[in-house]
Image (cartoon, rainbow, N blue to C red; front, side):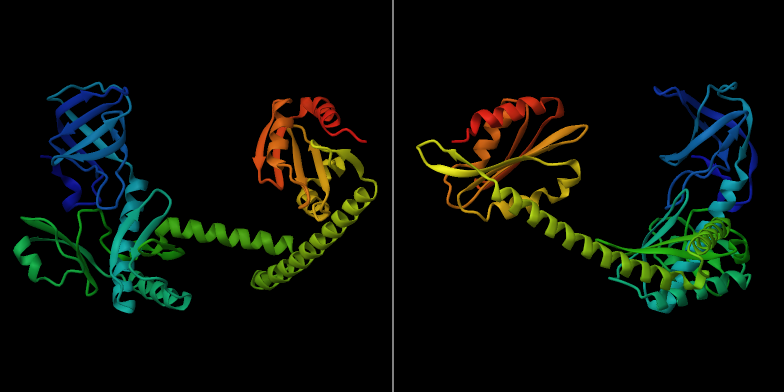
Length: 405
């Protein structure tokens, strides 16, 4: 067992301890166990501390059967039995205190204002989240919760640590039940919240500074709220405000008019997109009709004849390929072979009208097999690819297969 200094004093950053165990890992790191530690191990939704112990960098901390294991990134200069001094990274610990206490406040505000219990919470490197069993929460309700949570922050409530027996915790008005026997550690926010928790917290709610709900999303079992607290919330809102300022400058508009501006731009973009699609469809129709007017006559196996359109398209026409093919296939006795190339590969489409009995998929596969390509599709239309370097070989294969009579 490790004596956990952060349990009683989450502000403790420096400490002395005795080396109890030291083991080299296969990946070149070292796992260190001390008789006491201020380093918080990953758990309870909170990430681990980092820092150093006697000059050796601590990159990870985890719990193993009641012991706190410190992962060192380099070989230490001490051995088992030595006394060493540890230092926890102050900035990371401060962020953890702010995020974790802010999560308690936000969870309690959700419970009081909307009757929603926190099913799980995660405190990450750059974002935090709370999962709720509810399909959705409207923006107005979230704004009320956020404002209420921040009022608790700004009111400067005392945050204290209480230790009680599990039997006592059963009768206490805790936000969630204690899931352990023996001594239960409870974090109490004055006249607001009591919750069993082993994490690190501030001593006064004012230290949280700010709680900002930055995003909500639907998940399999409800809704997930993403939030930030303290300096991270300030940095996020500062960056968002800077972005709004740049957008307002770019579009010569006030920040409060950006939404209206974007809505107009979106409407204009939709109109232009529709107009472009209509013009492309008209161009595809004219292209197909022009090719039909000059279609050649070929003889099919068995003596039957058909009209053939065998054309190479420009790269710019690639988006029109399906429309041109569809227009051509409206002619019952027509067979089309349309191809184009780009820097990386070529495309070939083979299609037929409903009066022809040949299989377009089989035609395509046999043609592409001769040039190292592959593809497939339906009996009436198939499409595949071939190496661009085989373009001339493809054109020879098409000319040999579809001889004009």
